[in-house]
Length: 376
Image 1 (cartoon, one colour):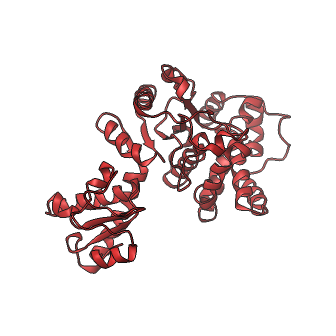
Image 2: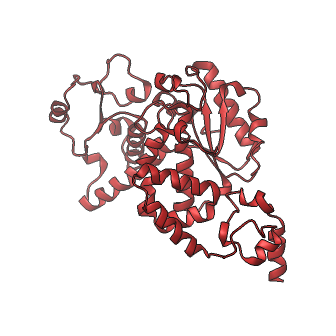
Image 3: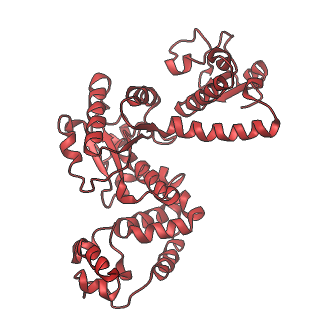
């Protein structure tokens, strides 16, 4: 019975070279002699069968011989493109060594050079020219049981700014971490880049740039494109979680609030970072036998992550009995223009919620003396 079940499973797989070119199912030299016979692989692989441990030993030796982290990244991505089983075995077993390679910090450099190191597409690209056809394009993805989409428009990649379509390394890398650390099967993940153009002149003038040579779409046209994408993705993949990744500050909060009550969406920069930092601070509060109401908190920087952390802290204080106004009175921000205070010009709504009726200060040290924070 077990052999019959195994044979039925094998029969459902691609055959021959199609199988060897499918990274989700290709095992390379680890295919047994029986599997090679049933899957039309005889003659397409070297005769000696290696087990997974032996394969791992080989690739580990190869990747460790690379001279730079970027060379290691390129090698690991090529491994992922041909044999995901081996890739995830390697990275999972050696997670401390390779997490900084497949994600930050190395992925930042990889995104900056993405068009120059591009070898094989991963995930999907939706562009502004696809408006009206996004559902049909998403249906081109042959795996229909997608549980998680990580999507970016490439406008604020890490701390590197607008990298346009070259930001695809972030959704790819983030979903790889979800497989390694959370056990989500890669067949259930889908990285997507929405290419709305880029304002990065260096990319626009780069002949090897993989994205549209157009300035960024903004305003109502941008919103309509994202609306169509979110609606289409939720129809094509009914159980999917859509994670927004590395959108610019002016869009990150707005899009989260736009969709959160109607679609299964999540913003890692706002909600994920906020949850992790809040958990750490709660541990500190327990250790100090203190509470947030007894603290004065100063944020150095007022990006989407910082605002998200502040909102989580404020929500926790409200749960503990404070009013939202009392909670916000304990939280201060210092951004590129100084203290966030009421009456300051061009203050976006997310910062304005935490603006204080105090005199502005552009020097961080003087701001610290004025605020007297207990947490920075």
